[in-house]
Length: 464
Image 1: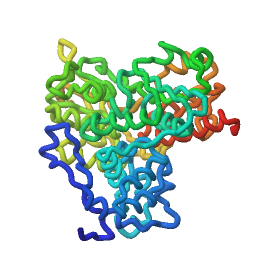
Image 2: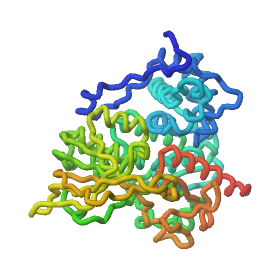
Image 3: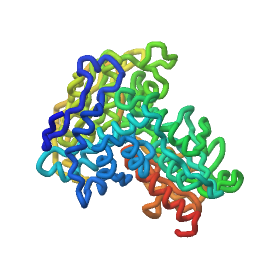
Image 4: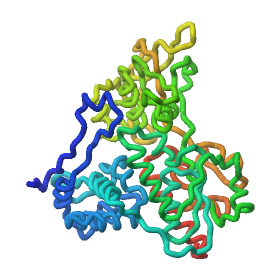
């Protein structure tokens, strides 16, 4: 197919009016001809800046070079050297600010669609029955991983490739962490993608046990002293939701985005035959401007609501990916920017019937460099609604730190990491991902899991 070397090969998507009423994947991805055409745009740089922008350091020019030659198996082998979850990364990574953001082709034209190419390779390899391979021999050492999210799965996969016997303990009834409970089906299909990626990790020799709450069922100390593990990695994520603490926030019909999305994604409540209840609002207000807010808003829309996103800063400051904001707007979600909630109102039965908002304007920059929003005096107004979803971020779950002696935590509740490899203040215990940093992206959690695997290997091999 003809290729404009300065522009990306367009990717096919569902029509916005159609997809707004279903939970099928929005982006349809590349076919063979499209993927190879896009791959042909790669300059194969001698100093590939794209690799420097990847938190797990995938050899991007290497896999694209094989894709140019129609060698999907070879391309998948290259990706698998660095990533245990390529089909996930190809869908949800913020490539525009990472690998694609540093692409040399993007200096004078459009960057290579690295994420879409990674997705194509991973999906095609899965269809061909290709799987990553584990170590041929075990080294006799055992590592426990707490949490089957992106950080835990990555750490476990890398350690298994090095010959370690690895067991993951997951609190929920399904593995995947935020991949299973947080990201909607229309962005990340569960059976077709998440479950298959987890199967690949198991295929490396990793054992996954669900319904085990470390800190209750067993403690970290027990894993080291009673269960015979030589090291432990804590990748428990950040599942503790934040609220605004405004009047009326305890009303019926007010949800954290975590609960709302977990009901839909993990429990399948969006399906008509699901036994898990979920609110099908008439008018939903989503408070927040990150990716989780976009996910909650687009889910509520598909469940039949008129949806408004309320965010106290301007569009330039929206922390969500531009692609997600674009998709939300295409689907008909309304953005009420420079607006902030001050009170939630309820009827005589305690159910939400409205929300009071105030107008904001941008003042001086705050500590992060963003201009601080300031309330406009006398601007308060009321909006009727029957559902409010708070998508204000999350904090690390306090259970591990409260049940583990010698494990230091930060002021914000994250486990303290003493180096770039996740070493904690407790001997033999490493940590990474949202459990350390607070809520961040899937790929950053994977990068932390990968670094921790290196740290654990060095520690158990005496190279620390």
